[in-house]
Image (cartoon, rainbow, N blue to C red; front, side, top):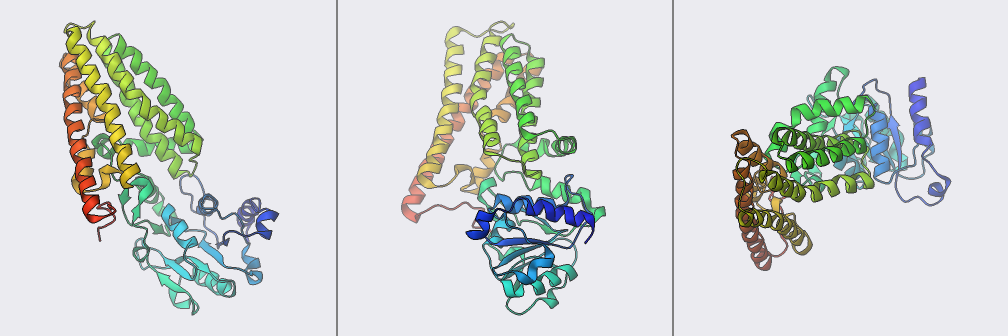
Length: 405
């Protein structure tokens, strides 16, 4: 093997512990062959090793040692690019060989082989020929695995299993990036942010900017927007707010495409997302009072109570749905997923505030947010009531995305 392959094997071996060797709790793994492709500034082999480790596999074999394997081995071609659900599916599927689903004819790119078939399976992966697979291994397409509905991202989509060439790098990176989006989200995140977020995410990955650093920048902008709203500087405040929401997209995408997500980063990001919106609305209300169209104290107080209480109650209703029904309410029916595009959350509310601020009526923007929050709260109550009735008559609810196809 070349020096680059040896370096990759050194990386794999560095994660192996003697305790794991004595008490194996997961299959061993082996990266087959070599690839010069670089995806999101890492070789596919490095991405595969990291994905395996995140799924509890940290014992790696060199190709030369496959003949001495005494237990099943997860084999992955060094040029394979696999979506996250497929890695766990392969670990859970002894005896199966995964075929690619990219352009061209499907070829074997990964396998979970018993020890006695590991060498032959590795050779089939090297040749990219399903016909050379030994008896005892079952070749399967991605569509045959029960992984189309990815609960973590609340979406239905066939995961990718690709063997791209160097010329396919950008298209592959775009496919990986778009694969990190949730199936139920707001209209700004879904349609406005992807293209610019892709390029900013790539810039961050290229220069080693971490997801937590992006989240920290978002936190600074949260306070900047809060201050400018407070003093009625709508242009600066909205600029800071929109950049913050954009970076809120970038940090999560950066974590997923570079496989650098962490428990702390997840808590850090979600805590900011959860806490800051009510403070923005209160600051906006205070800023309105120093504008040319102040509201009466009663109207202002009533609007803020509706907005803040409505925001909290909608979050509570969503939590009740997950707790009691085991389902995120926005993915139950198609109409619920469509409603998530515009429901009274931060980005749709910012659209209302921005539109009214542009015509010089920040006060009406606040009232519009209050009205839309009240309407959405009622609709959420109806949603949840329907869900409980359906659960009572049909049993456990399933997302429409799980039931498709």
